[in-house]
Image (tube, one colour):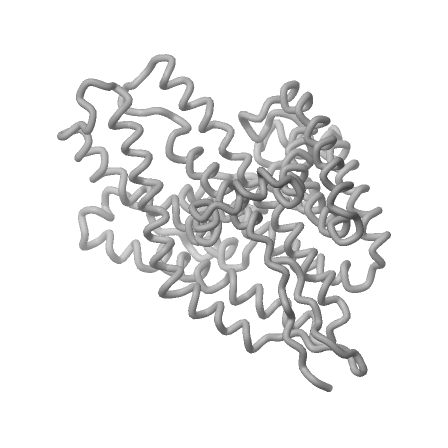
Length: 393
């Protein structure tokens, strides 16, 4: 039986949408709380704008559900469906993730004994029991209760949640018909707010505010919104999808105004509202010409290309640049007449440093490893001719 190369359907606007998501996350971590004693209307405006950046994580989840489900749907008849999917996921995620853990848990403590810079950012020594949550990709289960136990790795909870999704969802897509995938996805999206509203869940969330935000069963509506859209993308024409996206966006705006989007704990309905809003935005980016052009802009697509490395490493980069940047801008303000100039420049430089580091890790680590994907190609069933589709990527 001939081995067929999967031909992926690349959608450039999704690269830009991913770039927008990582930029939102960076704004949240860099400018959420204005520093340096700066206060006033401009300072508050910056803080309020940056404070909604955490929702970029929700956009990542919708995108992930859409892209992964698309790949699985197009390759579901492959004879090596599971092996190829998981091999490609491992090549994409694990190398940089585990190198980051090695640098943080093993290298950093050694440097702290010899280099004053690392002493200023001392992370302490975390024993094997605490580290196991990270080595076994269960960070979200741990940080749902203790989110700041390891501050610089707390963001890895999103990777853990996605890995748990990847462990189960390929089986579901492989063996369920598409109409059941649609029905099941809709059921999860609709019932998720009710699940989060259960009294015992709310009691837990009152003690542990990140419980519903990070614990896997309560955070599936974003991923399955993307999965639902992946099925619809293959079944409906673009005009109908455009109208559905516009209607979905209009329907979610009142919800955003009512529940707000400034913090993860704003309400049990908020994650679902955000999922529907970002799902509508995703469809609009694929079907409405102005957004197609905007999200296909090279700068946004470049941000999307390096988004995984930026997301994984940005807390470390920000920590490493805090002391020298603060000292430099204090000694030599870039805009002496403006109380905000140095603060804004500080954030711009930190964001630029995150992308510069990501560009290096892409060239040295990610790109060479991703080229190994050519050794993992989906095989068509016996008797099938033509190339086996590879899904949206």
